[in-house]
Length: 191
Image (tube, rainbow, N blue to C red; front, top):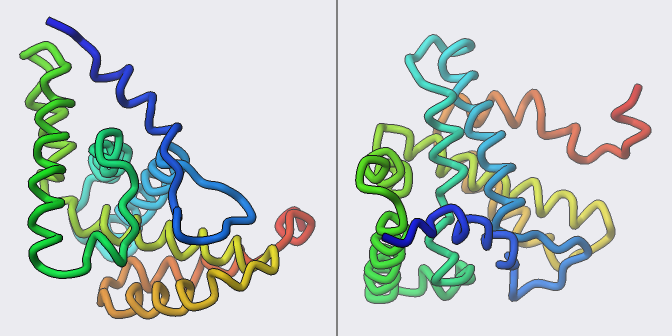
């Protein structure tokens, strides 16, 4: 058996995101996945501790770490292409399923169920991970705008609208309490 799962996961750092956009600061899938994990954990804590709804922050963070792992094989497909039409969505899902099968196949049998559940977004954390993924995209847009890169202006506006349209109180809480800090300089944050 070839136990190549973790060697493949380490290659997430080689996949650039936002390929259709001019970036002031490049972002790779590994960096993105880390931020999504941090945000998923935060949203889950808000859900559990602020809103009083049962949720596992640890499970949400773990699922978020692996949410884009299939991109090791598929690359980061730009959103306008990935969601172009129902046929494209279905085709991409089939390719993604094949990538998940390859990844899971690189683990000893005894470890497969845990990682397969994370890769397939099982365990009732899908909504939190999806919201964290969208939040991460919004933060990337804000960071690019802060550098003067207007290439991200429309993306920021449409992503903010999608976040607000999710009707998730934990997302609203994060936007109300934390998002403003991402528009500050390091000096302003240090105060």
